[in-house]
Image: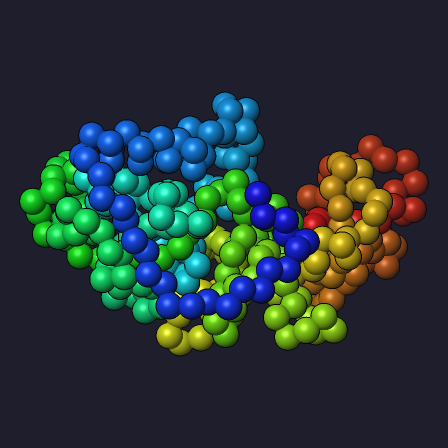
Length: 272
């Protein structure tokens, strides 16, 4: 898993993916194994249950360039679903749902597949998606597995993509692309995150301010969370834990803490 506290900077070169020739039986066996290794069946039932409780795992996750993975697509003689690993990539990838809207995605021609290049691409449905005689097209992109997403909230309670691109450089999680003394931000993972901002007119990526994990307060809240280093409430910026007597808590929080004695000595915050 990518360490969200570690900034990765990698120069992006033109992407060419080469698929090695192999028999159809070997193809199916090897790619099926790779999907297994790529966490398709990796998580235990407890881990899957934990993922379902996270908002970002219940919504569509953006690809690296702000697109969404297709539900059904064909590659190397197999029907694939959503975001997967294959042995030609260091990152998971997929064909996207809407090629026209994914302007920064990669053209199918960059996949130098052998044997079934014509049938590689997006399928209208799962039925017959493994057929190698049907001509298919599509745009592909690197994508995100839920278990790779940083669990820290951004300023607007989004989550940072584990790998994202800015000015042809790759970054990991919350980063400072403009230098160590600049503000931290990231492209966000979930497609429906309220409060995130559109990066530019050409791409679908959204971004948000964030805080580096190293800047979080070391103490925990009553329910063992951490306060956000910076957060906003009713249009005003706050930091860490705000005393109740200086900033009135939301009604829901007051109701939860109704049994506390000397409630005025407590504080509250948006959690990190």
